Length: 433
Image 1 (cartoon, helix red, strand yellow):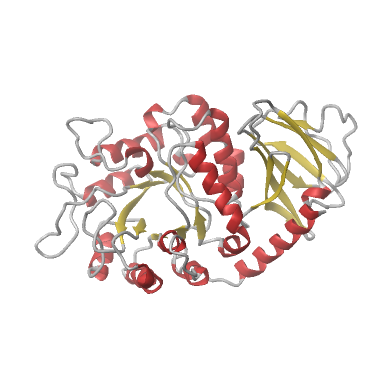
Image 2: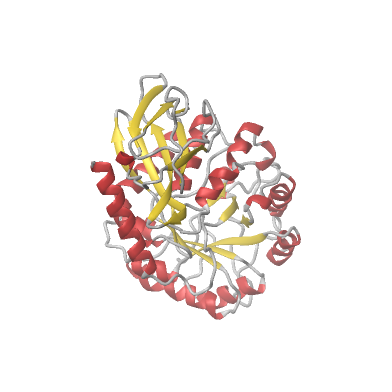
């Protein structure tokens, strides 16, 4: 009953607040952005002679664009190629404009943008609301209007604005001001802000209502590192803050727990499925940061799981929450379409935090998950390992039986139904792994 009450209260609160917030007035990011971003995998590798395959240069982003298309990512929604820090020259041009490093980006940023667009993709770039970027390159502070116009001239589609070398007390005004400069160019650009990540660590009270009006997405917390520890720490922090953070997420404005690690070094296959499931529940941007040419097929299958992407991109735009913790199992739920007669469908993730090294069986009723549609629910296993078909309908009293491996996930979608054909073979039809 604790779970039921919490789910009902959270969902109602989210819906009421989100409908009362106007997103950034650019009509963009009505679902969480998807694409590829360089930072987590490539950081600031600028020695192209020593690291030719891992260097931050124009070839890296051109290859990423090629692979997003040729490997089938773009047709699933991964449409942004985003340059992160270390693309800049150490100094501005004689007329005060930002300029790319001439050795690593000899063709210039406009040419790179044109190449990405020629592939049917969108182009993103990094800067910093400060005197310098985090890696020490020129920041936008003092040049905000000029830099916004420069991005528009380069036909940038997405701007990620970091917050190093700046006064955190002034971010509440500085970030919205830069957003207004972006809007005044007349070019639609997704605006990714970072000010809560910097103010949070200072213990400041963050104006999320303003953030949701002026930014399309925002980083709330620390950078993600390529490890299970880092990923689950971020998930836990989002759960800790969810009653406040989730109500400000919705079409046009999203909380951002940072990049997808899937296909790199730090997450196992099952841990990768867990990250993808939690990020889908959180309505998080799906921004891969990996070496696309070396992503193994089983990791690629996770990144390209259409059913999971559909949960992430659900048009209702309601951020999900962690609603229950029991016996080392975390339960995350998100209201999704279809919605009918006052009842939502749900995505439900059962995440194992157990350390006993064995798969764990767990049972719970739909009612205790807050699912009370009188006509029941059909259930789809989003990672496709159910022991039998799901053609029958599960009612609210039905116990759902899952078996979750260590640091793994069972991810189910429970769609509302208008008929009531109950499951009869309880030994099979309610068992998911």
